[in-house]
Image (cartoon, rainbow, N blue to C red):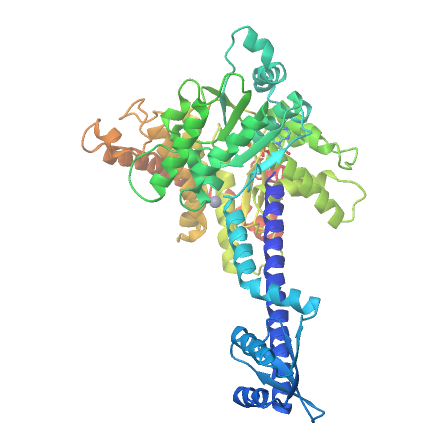
Length: 602
Ligand code: ADP
Ligand code: ZN
């Protein structure tokens, strides 16, 4: 979907560039033409010309035999009696001159007066060039308006319309309950009359909540596909990117269009971009409010006979303005979670359909290794695997291609070309060995799958853990031990090398975020108890007393300190193992799960 949008934008850009080039070419040709015309005139004048006063005199004296003039031109040709050649003259005002001529003729002076029309081509070109500036201004104007999406006649610029999405529920793997809930919407769209006759109110808005890539757009398209109705979509961020005042008008146009083609599905991606809680204020905020208000007006303004169902996607429902969630608006919410083990296998199956897989490829195993991955990531993995297989000149996609693709998607691409100093290598080896050994002594933590000091993406090395279990709940002990495992790298650096490095920055960030959530979201701080405190609103914190924020900070720090102490403890008691694993890493750069286990057998 995103790609299509990019293409649209690219096409639009191309067209604008072509139009601008055309305008330039016309301008250049025009100036050449005008230049040519004037120089021609000049030449004639120099050759053989008489002045206006001379001409009048000669006319009065009866020396002029014939005068030829061209309509719209101030240059005339004069044929004098007794002289063979013709002369030319420039006359200041044609109208007065014509009158003068007529008078001359009336007075009996013999002058043949020929009024010639210029050639058709010349005339057309002349008019065209006199109109050119106006035409250019009009073209530019239209261009600007089109770019801003003001002057649309039923088309939604920047938006996307898809009459036949071609997507059905079969293309959406897992999500069985969600599909079950949404099948009803398909019926509403298919047989609106049936429901209306029964007096049932058709739902207006449905909010799909979930991480990016979990298939929210896909399922919205599938509803349209199943019902055989058009699908029009737009992203919340697109409304906001608009020039001032245009967001609201875009919302209005989107819904105008939807009503025209009803029954249909309107899909608004990233609705939090428009629907973020209003907090008054200035500039972008009030612009945002206008867009949001328009959306609310549109949601309320449906007639009962218009079957337009609005689906909106967000990952941050708590950010949304409460007004959006009121009855008659987005009053239904469906959570789209990352797929579980079965779901992942199903998704892999769907995306493996069009790929050449070797017979030994085991999708169930891959599903087991990819807990927490979204549908988009899984489809990405298979695609990366196909690319790797092609690059490695395999006839089919091998398991090793897929393993490599999983690593590429999770940790980044291997960087063989990066030159690493021995000092950095040593540091990485101790750091990664630290993670691996510390987690070995933490019962709740997963087994090590691979330890490596080959740089990937931004990481200098990595420790990968096996994932074979989907959990809905994580216990406090497990979270505490996760903190210990995360800080194992830093602890090993400190104890083995007596120095610490920037290499642990990401571990520290992740650990701090987990600790903060433990205190403010999951109510796991002994001192604070089960309170939800994750808010940006200072007033909400104040109801608990003046220094609530301080206590949150102290409690978070306590969790981190305790975890770091525990990590150092494990390292100090297992220095021999740390040395052994780090040394092996420096030799081989990579240690498999089996090899890692051998360090703990004696
Ligand atoms: P979202 O809108 O939630 O960010 P998308 O619907 O755009 O996610 O999903 C991106 C892609 O990931 C889809 O086009 C599809 O290829 C794949 N995908 C995601 N979820 C699923 C699923 N449940 N079944 C099959 N493919 C999926
Ligand atoms: Zn680390």
